[in-house]
Image (tube, rainbow, N blue to C red; front, side, top):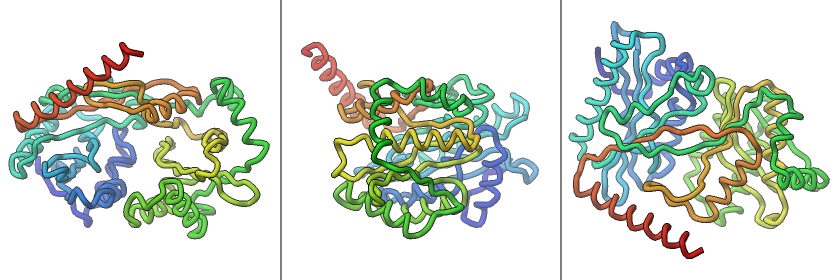
Length: 361
């Protein structure tokens, strides 16, 4: 086996592996790597991604970004979790275990070389091996010294009849969708009809909703490229010919993820988001796509995550469109004892406070 550093010259080979593997989704691709490398420039991100070859054939990939967050070196993706390393499908269990051991030894070596204090990884939900074949049944990160801190996400089976999908929608959401349909019209913009002008309106509305530019322009440029390449689309809501909401969705291997959305703050008391989500689901269903991950669900504090009331409300909003819960397997490994103690002491204090607050309610 040979470890080879990922460079831009090798992006095509990397992406070919991603496309043919049942265990990868869009976050493993070079485009998402580039997006993340430009997402938080203050973290000074550098790709340390590599792949493994056997007889000149790629048998595994490891997306990996080195970031400096508040003076601490970590392996993370925009301050969050790296996509998990992926082994080629249809190889023997013995060879798979050998490759995986080699990969995580290399990660440990890189952590030592760059004084990394924590590494974080997560599994995809929309890869065929997990969502369709159900071959991924456990979190293998634990075998390599990672602490389990998995999560939940909400997925909608788009293969169901549209009437059946509408029946799964929560009653309150159902009423809000009907109300919005009386005043709004929907438009979908994919590789066939996207324009620079339409995307500029998305950027403008994004900035208006946030009250500022939240991230570098290049990340928006990359999102537009995703649409032009057929790996994303926009869904917009218009009232009297003006956009009052737009959302960006990622499309890869016939499965879809809700990536980013923005609504005109002047319509905060109108169900624009409900209308966009349902319009998107109708369109996805009509196109014959398989699964739609509407997104992670924050239901309450854990020892690694502390959602506020707004985040919990967003999770409830997502659940209102029906579908089913799936786990997002995740794990983190600490390479520095004092850093581990600091992080977990802070987490224990925060979790203890959440217990007290719940008891007082």
